[in-house]
Structure formats: C-alpha cells, structure tokens
Image (cartoon, rainbow, N blue to C red; front, top):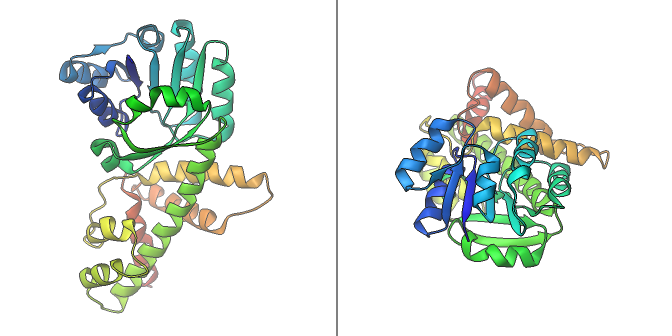
Length: 287
C-alpha cells in the first residue's frame, strides 16, 4: 500500500525511514520543506508540494504533528486530494474531541483512525512503538502489515477517540512514574546513597520500571537529552486535565506535574527530556 507521512519531526522522520525500509513509503511532506527535501534525497521518495498532493499519491496517510490545531489543519489541507478508500492514520497526541472532529471532516472522503503511540524516540527509531487505535477495526486490519514496520504492538481500542483516550491514561501514568522516580532519586542523593547502586538494586525489585532503568543513569548525571520533551508532555497533560474536567475532577498527579513542568519551561528547559524533573526535586533538598 502506497504510504505517505506528513510531519517529519522527532517521531515522524524515523517512522518514515522504517516504512521505507519495509518498502511502503512513497511520499513525504513537512511544513518546513528542508526536512522533506532531506528525506526525499536520503530515502529516494517523493516530496509532495503540499498535503493534497501527497493525498493524491497515497492510499495510507500517516500524520505525526504536534498539536490539535495542526491535526485539523492538515486534515483540511489533504481533503482536496483524498482518493476513495484512503485511510488517514493520526499518530499525534491530541484530544479525543479533536480526533472525532477530524473523523467527521473526512467522513465523506476517507477513513480516519486515531492512533497515538508510546515508546518515545527510541521506539520510533527501532520500530517498536506501541500503537493505540480508535476507529474502524476492518480498516485497521487492512493496514496492519504496514504498521508492523513502525510498531511492535498495534491494539484496537474501540471507536474513533478511544486511541487518544487510552494515550491520555498513558500520559497520566508516565507523569506519576516520573514524579516517583525523580523524587526518590533526589531523596537518595540527599541521604548520600550511591545512585548507581540504588538504580541497579531497586530496578531489579518491586519498584523497578522502564523509566528508572533507562533514564535513571542519565538523569543522575545531569544529562537530559530528549526522549520525550518536557514541553510536549506538558501539552499532553493539559489535554488530560481538560478531559478530567468533564467529570468535575482534578487529577493530583497531573496538576502537580503541570506546575513542575511549567517551572522547567520558564527556566529554559522545555526541550529537555522529562527526566529533567530531577532538577525540581533536587531543589527541594537545597533549601
């Protein structure tokens, strides 16, 4: 199936490379033309002149953009070129309402699947992402062979919007884990414990988790190269907060993490990995 990727950032570009290696990628487009031109030359594919041009060439269109408004703008932009039977799969993290709006706008032209992913930049490069999909199950089945080149697990969650709802739950959990690990490591440091041994020993016990094992060693060395940027997680948690408000509920972990991330962003650390939360936790013990 001829596949195109719109959005060639930290996630979209490695997904495009994996799709090309598997023989699926035909076309790319990016708001910044230089990124599209670079991948065109690297992968020997077509760089579309605009989203509608890409839609005319591809039966599967994969979106990887940053925000709700971007998703809706791209959907509107591809509409003039969408061919009958096209599937539009959005891997961005946006609100459930935005996914439903996108599906409604494409309803007469194409099938829309909301398919946010988890696994970070590492997963995008390795093709081991976890994909949570909302939408038509039969259409998802048609493109599973293509998605196998970018994701290790593709799970159908229900109708349009359930993929994004599932991702919201994931982001709340990620915030809680980040809070717990960074706070515990700052506490261990204040107690003058050897952090390398703390990570090794506790990582093999009941408190062990992916974040501690993969981010613990770098964050304790003050290295916060982005796997998942603070500013993006802040954006995602703001969506979670908005979704919780429909139940007249405030989620304490979300509220606390939004405050901490805002401080990091104001201090110029918004493009660092979320493990930079350790900066905030260390500061508690420096008073």
